[in-house]
Amino acid sequence: MITRRDITLGAVGVAAVAVTGAGLLKALTARARSAETFEVNHTPEEWRKLLTPEQYAVLREEDTERPFTSPLNHEKQTGMFDCAGCDLPLFASATKFDSGTGWPSFYAPIEGAVASTSDNTFGMERTEVHCRRCGGHQGHVFNDGPKPTGLRYCINGVALKFVAQTKS
Image (cartoon, rainbow, N blue to C red; front, side, top):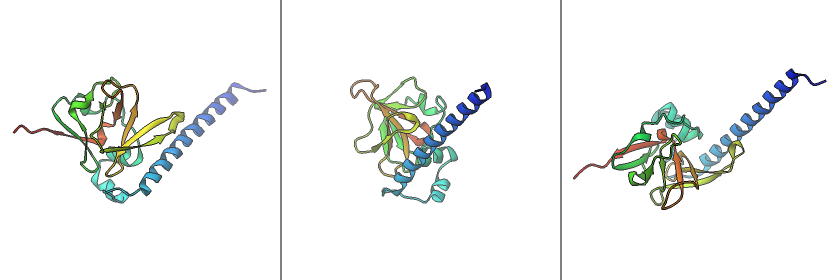
């Protein structure tokens, strides 16, 4: 006879396997990227010295910051959003829009600034976006953005640095 306890333990076991599997897939993707050659390379220890713990988790371990926590969600100045890992300009402020998702969103990156890979973690098919110069995880791109591209680059704020345009 199956008891309520058996069902609960089974559900907990399935959830643990799913989380572990997703974490393993994410770790394998991060490990594969770390084997790639980028213009900017550091050891994990060097990255930890250069980045805050939150930046390291997102840029190097493909973590995701909590939604609605980034001050860059409200950034309205003219300027550039650079990679927090290597300072490469990734997005121009002119392409930023409020997606309502809780993360800074853009409809297009600067040409040649980002690269992408397939991300199948958590049972979803997504396209992961990373800095082409250091390989730092930025976020994901989706096909539900505004014109002119129809794309939404949903980016972790801690993976970016905003550099305001100086007036000349």
